[in-house]
Length: 479
Image (cartoon, rainbow, N blue to C red; front, side, top):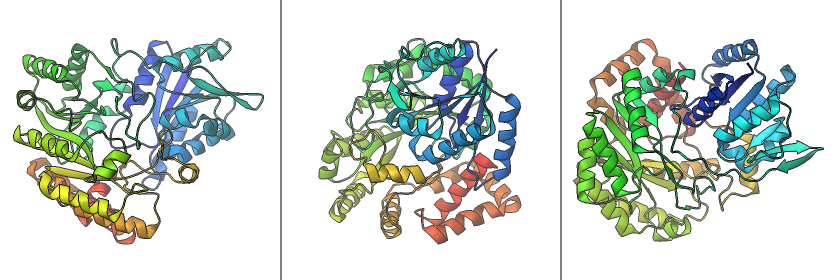
């Protein structure tokens, strides 16, 4: 049996669900699969040494990496290490970044880059490599021939009608559910993760992607079966839907909630929607009854000009109505903002401040704009930056100079302080959080001190508490 190692270049606070879907399809095709998740070496360098030992001991025939853009550099380093220390291994790079810049990964030393969704592509590719067939007829790949890149025809997005469950057994999924700080924001419960849909039919200029613009739905029965399986196997208390757009159609949400209630499933559920897709009052009340405690919305900005330029297709009035409707149903609102866009002005930021003062969102989360390949704003300078940096998922940074970073950090702190509840303080509603804090203070105080040290030197976070909370998340992830 041929062997393959699938690599997550940087472990985060949530499981690499996309990579685990790939693993399940490869398993089903008859390959021996191992998943390795490297960690940020700033936290535990010795752990990565052990992981490399595991890699060499397993001695795979094939290596696959699932890569997001801000892990480009570290993924390239991994490919180069495999090339320099082994021979005869076929290296395949897939994920968001290789889909848009496959040539970079071929230059790093990969044999093939997968463009688009990889479940069907990887199986066809492995079979072709195993039986030494030509690669030209495999859709959705790029490879070098005589020094020139060959790109095959695009792969159609897969159907989710018969979706397999991710291969959670290949990672320490129990550990992921127990990180808790990486589950439902502002809550401290054992949390599972899954996807009910894929894609988003909208085309916001800061995140639009070809594949993600094809919206597809898993059958409700399939979703409910996976939920029951996670409850039975991992005893989860909460559930995070990782979809870009869980609440898109009223009738589908109603069907899901009725299924949850009929199965007597008791979970606290978090999902995402859009302010203009929030439906009838009765639907929201049903969601509350089915266990939804928090809905996230992409508010993005309080400036109509910014909303138009990012092609958000929503208005300020729709934002207010959507947040109010969810609040009125007794469900927490979690409003996402993006700051630091290239054309954003002080006036735009002041308009966002005005909106937040009127919005009464339960929680407010502010993300720094990060240019991504495949988006209209992405340019050559951004591309060079991504060649050099490497961020962990728990970090909040921008491409801006240090002075600009400090200015944006000021607005980030200000905007997040305008929520009705502080998500960090909300953690204290859970008695188990007190026990966790006590354990850190008594036995791992260096964790908190490290977070404070980073904050004092770099001012990356909106408060000292957020800096310490992020340090605690990293401690939960990396040990």
